[in-house]
Figure 1 (cartoon, rainbow, N blue to C red):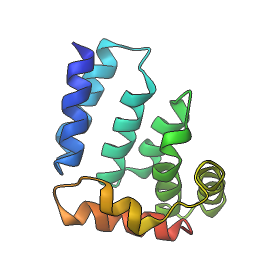
Figure 2: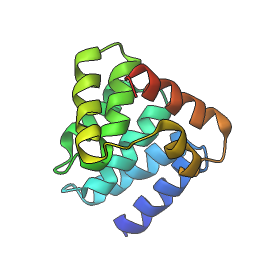
Figure 3: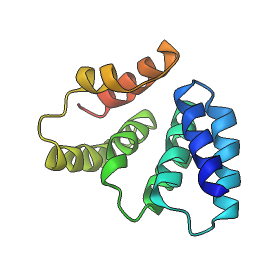
Length: 129
């Protein structure tokens, strides 16, 4: 049932409950130690919103296909002041989606609480988006 737990964790991230989400996703990972990238991306998001930026980066680094997670990695790197790695991930986003726009992105990402969008916006802007 690891996939069901992952789905619940992902929902909790968007419901502005990142602490609960991280606990759930860690459980899913423990049940499926060869975790799919989606699990790791969910854990990175939950970690970011708990302001555990190094952990968020580590989850992204563990992904086989980091393409969907370069934004959260760039924001995390920027939040810890690592401009070089933030630039690397921002450039990856630009190569995948040259028309990426922070405000358009945040308008479609479903977060329950405004603070999540503001934290994500801060990280993305610090990363140079």
